[in-house]
Length: 377
Image 1 (cartoon, rainbow, N blue to C red):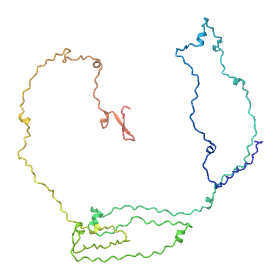
Image 2: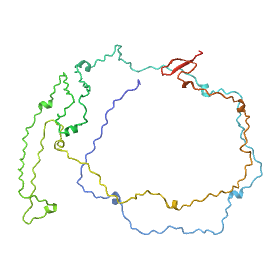
Image 3: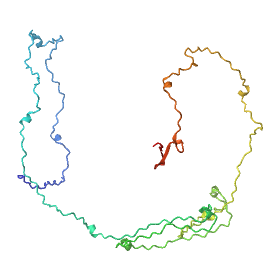
Image 4: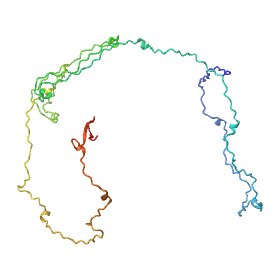
């Protein structure tokens, strides 16, 4: 680190490309091969074959090698290998699990090196942190108005007896009723005591463009035709009249009047509707086509009329008799249960008594159960 000197690194200078200059000479489109190549006359070359041909005999070749001809096998005994007997023989001494590295290793203490880290000059203050920000300094709390809480009106039972009439029935009877009123309470806008004005820059600088008056065309006065109305179909309308053209439909434009008055909960249906006198229609019943006899039906079938009962024939049983003990013989009454059993009388449950005998009433617990104790205690 001490010997290191940082060299000044300069930006790399790039060589500017040479400007292309267009030459006036025409390109000959010839290569170096075409310029330096001299053509020679082409002629057929005879094949280069040797003058003397080698004679290959057709006799069978001897495939024995020189090694097999000259090799003579000696009758000698097999030599013993000179390899020493390096059989592993483990020692009986207890192994101490130490290696050569552990024996030859010399422990060296850590070397103290010099620290070149620059000291931290920023001193930490022990004073507590002040969480006073610019927002807290300039913040001005404004008091808020109390929020409007709607109080529910207590329900009062009306003294007028209920006659089973609904709103539709009341208005249907053409009774004079007042229009429905809104039950929603009036909620005034909460105006805060803030310096911000309700007008904006857009409202102050905005100027409405002068709008020209809307030109409305007066509808033509409808004049009903004096002639009698012709109830013709589409085919008859497109039919060319011999004496002239058919009359055109003169229909006036319908103007919708927009009323700004509140809705009075009365519709055109309720005002213009008049009840009709409805009579209950009797069901259409046709005359019965099938006639039933006055006498009762005997409900007899062909099988019941032609059935002839026959007496039962008793068949003789050829089943062999039972070779075991007879069934009517009595079982021996001397058993272990019969000798050790002592009959006891039927004891009535104490819960069935209103006041159980030989017991005194003590009291009742939290669950309502009555507690009794024996009279002897």
